[in-house]
Image 1 (cartoon, chains in turn orange, cyan):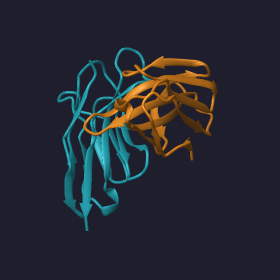
Image 2 (image 1 turned 90 degrees about the horizontal axis):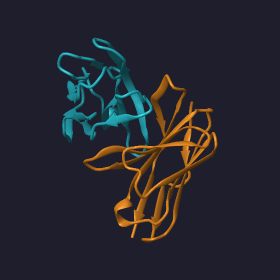
Image 3 (image 1 turned 180 degrees about the vertical axis):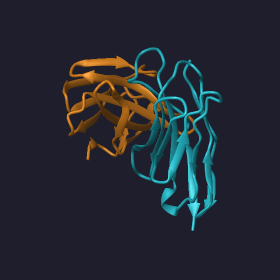
Image 4 (image 1 turned 90 degrees about the vertical axis):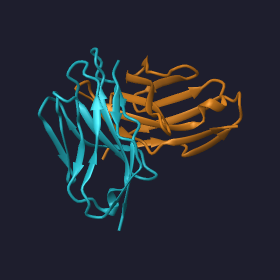
Amino acid sequence: DVKVTQSSRYLVKRTGEKVFLECVQDMDHENMFWYRQDPGLGLRLIYFSYDVKMKEKGDIPEGYSVSREKKERFSLILESASTNQTSMYLCASSFGKAGANVLTFGAGSRLTVL
Amino acid sequence: GDSVTQMEGPVTLSEEAFLTINCTYTATGYPSLFWYVQYPGEGLQLLLKATKADDKGSNKGFEATYRKETTSFHLEKGSVQVSDSAVYFCAREHSGGSNYKLTFGKGTLLTVNP
């Protein structure tokens, strides 16, 4: 089974801190994604990457950046955390272009910014 | 733009009841359609998909039929179990050439009581 592992299940950070959320997948998937999940809003795409060092903005990239130096790892970076970034963050991966939208998700990282 | 509208929850049913969760999508292009499920404490996982009009996706007793004339992809199950308690997300493929992006509905929480 494909495994997508998010390094932290729960984080508490202060406003203005730099935050790193790490995601690793173990099945050689080309594509990786970061979503945020908020009650009443569903899932919204922040960034995705279809290859090492390649990235594209999703629907809500403001306040976030990403890094993909290795195929298996995709990091989400909050340069200066704000309270409105308190949310559940979901990483996902998928295989190839044809199967790009069949996603395997990690368990999520719940971030609280105080 | 692309959007998905699914019935608001929460939905509470007794075991062995019939389930319908409605989902409609904006009629831009001919997108693939999906249902994802999120069990408590876990990330989302693909439940079923359909790639063209009149296709029926099915898995674990759940079914959904791609209806182009009504732009709908309603999820149904004839007899729900307690273990089906989860949040269900309808999703459509992005129109405009990039199948990397999925647009998700807001999710419907289903609780099944014994």
